[in-house]
Amino acid sequence: MTQINHNEIRATIRELIENKTTSGASLARETGQSTAAISQYLNEKYKGDNEAVAASLQTWLQARDAAQHTLPVIPDYVNTPTSEKVIAALTYAQLTHTIALVYGHPGVGKTEAIRQYSRTGNNVFRLTASKSRTNELETMYELALAMGISDAPYQRGALSRLLRHRLRDTNALIIIDESDWLNYDAIEELRILQEECNIGLAFVGNHKVYDRLTGGTRSVDFARLFSRVAKKVVINGVMAGDVEAFCKAWNITGADERSLLKAIAKRPGALRSLSHILPLASIYANSATVNCEHIHSAMIELGHAPVDEETAA
Image (tube, rainbow, N blue to C red):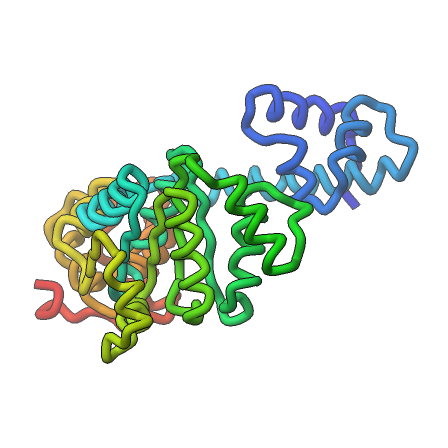
């Protein structure tokens, strides 16, 4: 068993916190220890099992060190022509207090774009719908949690009144990712909230979102909702500039490598496949320039079918 050096662990963790590389809250989430336990341990005041806290922190430090020496530097965000279209729609909805609809094939960068917008914007609340969160009560409760309301009532009327009070005239934007999961009642509740509070609202998802909002036959109920959608952005595939942006972010300069990545991006999974393949290809490259052999090796290990030369040409 590795000997635990408490002084060394304390000094290393303190330095990481002081440099804002991590935080007590992050350490608590990633180690399973409480924030209080970590704080008291670092200040040599913990009355509990110091060995257990130290072991958790040491394991965290070892994993961090291994990742730094193994994983390449992964771009936090790749700005692509498609992501710019998505962000433009979100910006429009927030500035004009209207509804935007962004839909298209998976893997084209919609989710990464809305994550970036929510990270950099003010009063932007991003939710992800799912099979277990399809109705109006679950959706409104998720919104309350996203807004930092931890004690929100789990009752339709009280929750609706609370959200209206908190959101009115805040210039906020609510973004619902995977919104094709939402049922009609949830969509209508969001639409009414947006209208009453004079804020922006964006539905993001696959092509089913459009079908859901139009009701297929444009019934009176759905027409009332669809007519309020001010901006619609459909993304049917990856643009050439999207792959070029990925190549630039990953320092891929070779013509053959760029052609290969464009061929991969034409497959189902699109840019998401590139974001999985390129880190592993960089590991294979071992600080050298990533080439086609590295990319093919990464593809095979991740279960992708190889791309022949004619397809990549």
